[in-house]
Length: 461
Image (cartoon, rainbow, N blue to C red; front, side, top):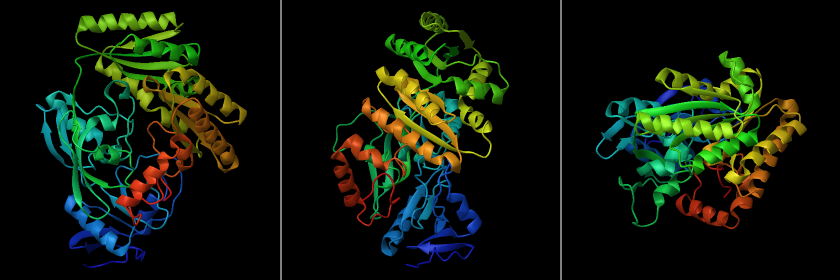
């Protein structure tokens, strides 16, 4: 086995044999510096190098080499995570899986696709559209399928289709001892053995490196209505959203955007929407008459909750424009605060606590003098907050974030609905899970006794 000191910072890209598998190792400082910050501006150390495996054999060989040389590894997809999952802490080697991006199989009859981890969700949807099928998990960013599984991503469509745990049927992974395992089966249900597949989903690369996934596909609906509805208050919007869910309407997206966010959208997109809290809604229907009836029912519900503006998108072009407003929210807010870093964080709470949580978020921001924007996957109780900051008010932002999590836990919620724990929310784990954290630590130690897989993330062992 040839060994290469990937920490020599030679400023070169060279091919090295890792346990017999030749892989290019990039140690150029300009390249490595790109891996020292994440989407929110959090900073980590410069990694020792970056490798780009293209398949399971190369990953397994790399892991065996890492075990022999005690080299820590950080698996990485598209790099869209928001909680420091991908930042090096002690000169780890980055395992960039973006080149492992093949579609291995699409089975319309089984409503499944089998892919490598580096494939992005838009690439998969482009390939499945001709079969009338779609991969439905939509976190907003064009994330890789493997990264989405590693963080248990969800997003705008979770209210109807669920997140990654509900949509990954089976996976292949390389464990910290270098062994390759297949977890799960490409069937809708199984009662066979411990559910190790779901243990890896959401583990942020701390227990295994995912090298293949079989995911669920869903039919693309023929009849779809998209609406943007404005309300006088957040509580009125939340009440309308909960009533829609209670009426069993086939809602596939149900998003809340607060007043500051709508102000930012108008400025960024050149629109003149009502600058008040709004719901962005998708309803999937089985026929044109059903779609019309469901639109009427939504109108009845929102008008009963004092809606001040209702916009309906019927055509594909209109729907695309409506959802571009929502998907560009982060960039809209960012454009209003040039030169700032951003706290982009999330919690999730029971439906009964949604309105109070958004109001608490706004109040805490005002008390600390922060420009807070709130949006949320209101259909599944997930509240997202964006706060610009500089070094001058960084302490206030940290206080704000801590207060948000404490509030969510106090009302029966969770520290993170979809962004994950990563580096930044480890301190809340025991408050949320109690002694179950000791079980998590025992699992990590049993599977990765050398602490080589994404060390320091999720758990302190």
